[in-house]
Length: 196
Image (tube, rainbow, N blue to C red; front, side, top):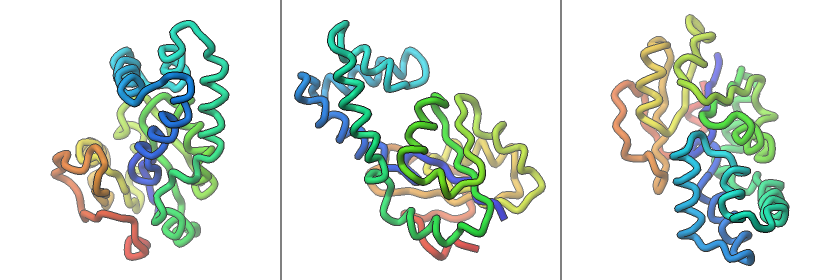
């Protein structure tokens, strides 16, 4: 049995991390509105990286202080892991576990490492491409995919229809209402009942 677990909004509360970064950077004049506007700009230019975002926020100023302050927030990234994740990961530690995350590989690897959840996985895949391509290596195996994005589940289903797809719809997350056609089960938290 292999579990393939999405990272952002499945294991990791990305919005809580974002809020902590905004609070930490406020002493440098960074407002929530400015932070979010520049974040959208970085994403529009390509994949998000913290470094590109901080460069925009620094406006040619003291980027070193912004980087140092942000790194202190990330050093405590385990606080942004959803509370139900730890018991779930401990209960599936005998299974094969892949963490699969979309985004800038350097940025995603950093969050996964600093959050502490990476130690529960025997394989971490960070991709800036289609997740469906990344999971094809598991075709023909018994797999459970847990993801918060309905569109990603539907895409992965096309590559691996034999897998079981758990659509994790956490309250207050950005993709909770995204359409999903090919899920096997819908849940709003990770529970021990998902351990097979």
